[in-house]
Length: 118
Image (tube, rainbow, N blue to C red; front, top):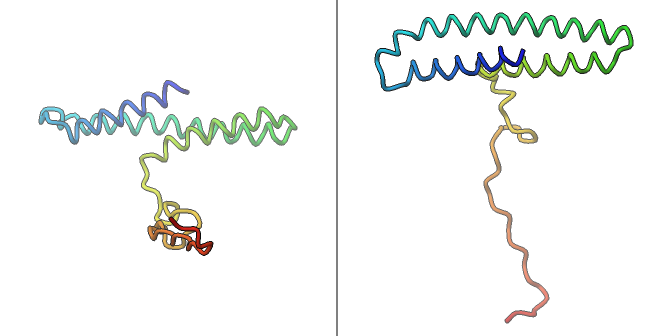
């Protein structure tokens, strides 16, 4: 399945070149490349479903290690598939911050109360 993941990554790069590259002649290939991406995504989605089903069956039969391996592989492939989909705003927020923004205020320097200055 690694070859399919690599193929998808390569097709995504090719699509970016077709859309944003300097050569106008490549823009004509955009639809063809998108069709190939859709084909590979379909194959990978089917593989993920099979791995998730296999993980469930193995887990139910007490083969926890093999079930975990199948589940991890399914999650890894799903992560590659999800790279094309924009994440909802809620998942892009930083953990621990309700607004999703960083606190850019600098901390106040400690005051020297010992009186041992220079």
